[in-house]
Image (tube, rainbow, N blue to C red):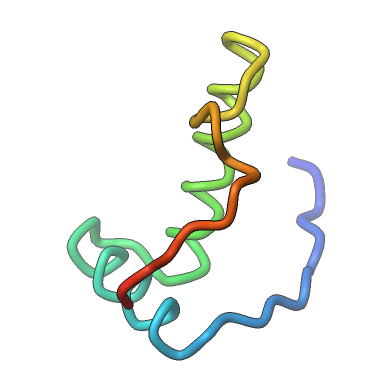
Length: 64
C-alpha cells in the first residue's frame, strides 16, 4: 500500500464540529470522514467527468 501524504488543513470550528458529528454517526474518525468524502467526490468526478454539483465553485452560505 502506498504511503499516505500528510496535508495540513484548517477548518472553522463549526465545520469541524459538523464533520466530527457526521464521522461519529458513520463510525469513522474525523480524518477518516474527510478522506471518505474526498474519495467519493473524486470517484464521482471520474465517473461522469464532473464534480458532485454543477455549481460547486459558487460560494455557498453554510449555517454551521
